[in-house]
Amino acid sequence: MGDQYVIAVLVSNISGVLSRVSGMFTRRGFNIDSLTVGETESPGFSRITISFRGDDDIKEKILRQLEKLHDVREVEVLDQNGSVIRELLLIKVRNSQDYRQDIMTAVEIFRSKIVDYSPTALVCELTGESSKIDAFIELVKPYGIMEMCRTGIVSLERGENCLKTVK
Image (cartoon, rainbow, N blue to C red; front, side, top):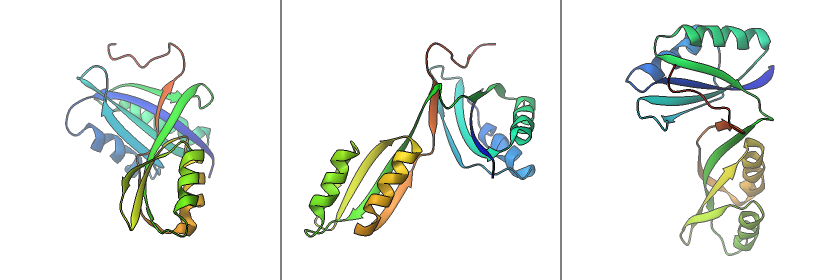
């Protein structure tokens, strides 16, 4: 499978760019583990965060191909030790009087929060590294996961290093 890489791609904030970026992966047979996109501090640019697995050769091919795309301004591999990496989980778990307190304890330990409560379901919100998200899912699985949604990874380098919106 290879190592996991997280790359940040600064692109023009115009229609079709995301399709071209994701299409580049598809055409070359590369799999994307996670993809998130959103506007940056400069409205003319969007930031795409992509995680994928592969070896150094695959990583270099992906970087070269992304840099060739017209509306890509900057591509950077993020050092996972030198970056803040987070993901958001919304998870709906069955609510039962028999194990409600166990779920509440898990929510407290994981610094999660309950954002919707009904007699039959609890919706929990959790932010953290993917391993934390995975651990929470495994912990509440026995109580009955009704539905869940993960955002994918977002990441910023620590310190003053930034993707530049102007070249």
